[in-house]
Length: 87
Image 1 (cartoon, one colour):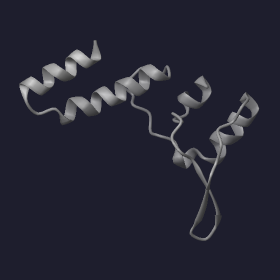
Image 2 (cartoon, rainbow, N blue to C red):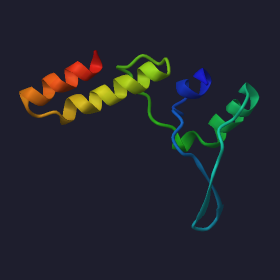
Image 3 (cartoon, rainbow, N blue to C red):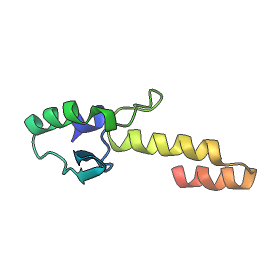
């Protein structure tokens, strides 16, 4: 799982094109060998890394969400409420 996180796959949906205009959802790999092939084949669908966040799975996802939350919070009251969620 850590290998997938390090390469931008946070369990978002990934698709393979099977015909023009037709896509099939691809299951996530179950072992490291499959994960390596998966990363190579679907690298175009990986989420770009957030270099400000630690690359350790859930912490990276939380940091990314916190960054989005920080940019979208407008009022002081909302900012305080968002900060409480992070604790």
